[in-house]
Image (cartoon, rainbow, N blue to C red; front, side, top):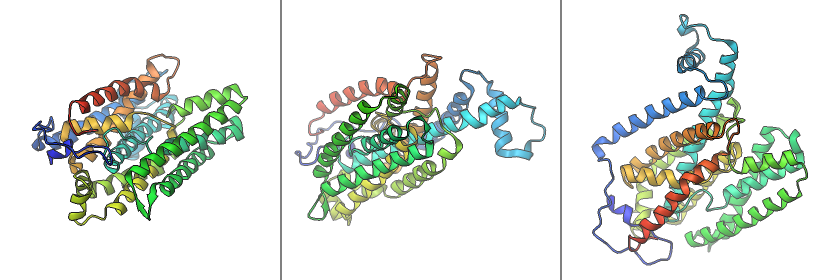
Length: 373
């Protein structure tokens, strides 16, 4: 299965040559359970730290006590009394924010991994099919029409409708003779994405409310600052369901990386499976973008980092990608809140600062690997 790592290429390009280069993962398969345990522990610690850090510093002991009180309730009658203000800060504001960061990071990472298989290109990410641009246009239109009075639910709904509208157009233009063509899908995604991006810029220019425009810009760059418990239900369920479904489909995904002929020989209906991957990853991206805005580079960085650690077999890759994505975005949110305090930075400012150098490194690494796009 390690040969999968040398199979990346653009659709229609020449097949890769065997180079003899080892593509083995950094962590051996027998240590895989330890990786999952370590990532889970780090994720829990990062969430507790994210709840603790802020304009009002709260000790980890207090955070832990409030979380246990709200989750276990009467089972902890002997728990120490906690100030009601601290309880409200922890449970009503910071806990949903930290958990939404986990969901968004995991969702974007899983979507990126699926899209990289779909187009057989390691540089694919959730922006590729234009879904993020569609969601941005929907959100900006909602803000422009409703100004500051628009509700968060309406904003999320508009962003989701924009993202799904973009996906429908991409699927419409990306099909040829009733079948999904990877090359056409990518080109349609780029074209439709640019159109939606241009429309978003036009609406931004038409906004006369300075405060509303600042909110639009902040939303376009990604934020989980306004998270509430009501934001978590649908995205969490979708991320969980999609991750489980993709993990079940790990063998077909592995086969697709080996080429259409190999996948067809294994009994996979390639065009139908590609369509399923496109819909699953796009719906997941749309749902995440609707609650957190556009967060770049997560869907590109995390699958690659996971692939370096545990290899290209999606049975191992996808769970590590989901945990790693959640952990990464929680840490990014902590940095975004503290790096320029009291000013809070959009998430994409941090993810771009980390992701752009990684992107350039990937380009250089692929240039040194013949046959890899």
